[in-house]
Length: 228
Image 1 (cartoon, rainbow, N blue to C red):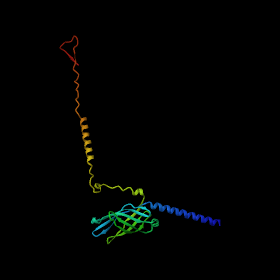
Image 2: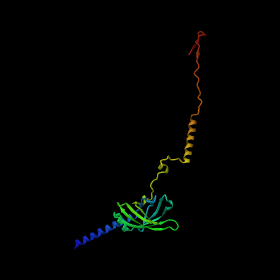
Image 3: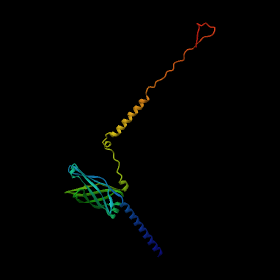
Image 4: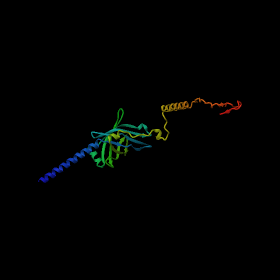
């Protein structure tokens, strides 16, 4: 009897530990940022591109900004706020690698913004990433996008990736700012002045050679001189 009681207590302890660990895991997952990559679909003779910003989860809702750019029909562009409903149970299913249906809304910005329902299917390919199939109706057209997604920490999502300058991206040489050009020209002029002053002619005093001395020996012919 004591042995059975001990086993039941051990099982209950293990179950509570498992539930606590699962709750902790879900809590950590819920605080991570959802990043959805840009994706495109053909529209007539052009294409529509869906761009979604980093989505943060609050009370079971991932929310953030979105843009739809339609090329070359720029008048069809729109932007607004996206809200995707993902419950704790759905998030746990995604973390287990199971395909999970999700729903949400997209509300256009500006006065008289319209709200349209959206639907999506999350198809994980790992714990932190996967693919989405997202669709909604715009007018009479069904828009379908298939982006990839991944989860990341808040600190990593807040730092934008480095961007190359337009000149470098286009393969053109960078043009130096006017202020820096003026500074370099002034430095070059000052260097020339210093170099010129160091080459100024300095008068050199020439020392004449020693004069010849003439000595006359006593008793010698005064006409005879010995020069040293």
